[in-house]
Image 1 (cartoon, rainbow, N blue to C red):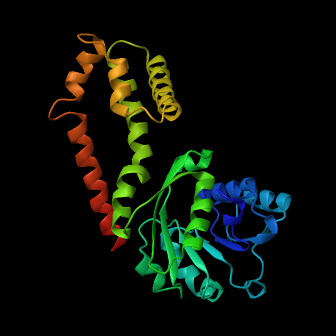
Image 2: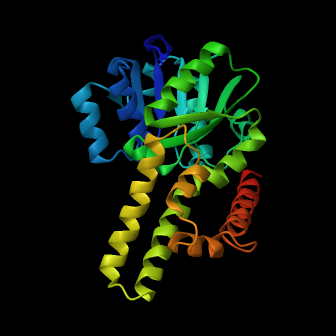
Length: 274
């Protein structure tokens, strides 16, 4: 990303775990601390310390703020109605609103804030360690310059994938937004299976965790090798892995189960979005 893609003024509304991770990422990228104002009435001590150490304005008087280039909404979705009247005056005609609120559509936001340019983003929890992935959609009013700014800001917490239309955000939510929980459950299930096979519980859990961590790192370091090829690389004909895959790749196996799980998550995302 280019340094020029970073905004010259930004207001972050809500700085919990995800908002705080984004703030740290922006500062690491080179966003000027003086360009940022954070609004969070429930600021944790860690956030207070970070803002004090880096010279970021925390909860300045709203009357002292002018319309920023970018306003990032990182509050809990249920807090939007409460926060909107206070922050609506900050949205100028050229302000880009970037929302990471789950379940709040561009229509929900536009009904509460006078925003012509809205980017709706769905990050996931590995963003906390800079290894997240964020699915993003833009409203028709977003300019190429604003899109580049949003992309730069979101890449501070990991990879970014732009989708063509907002309705695909529900599918993004079902795959990557909720996906870390699927992976964590895989670790639980693999450890439980190892225990059932005779391993002590603590050893089974350590084996399962390290296997998933290492496999993920292998995929990260081999971006041009497909997951299918990596699977084949582990599988010897007639061997132990092949025996297990006969179960996992059966018609009613993991692929079918995952398809049903993602469909259920997508359906629920649509319900929550109204």
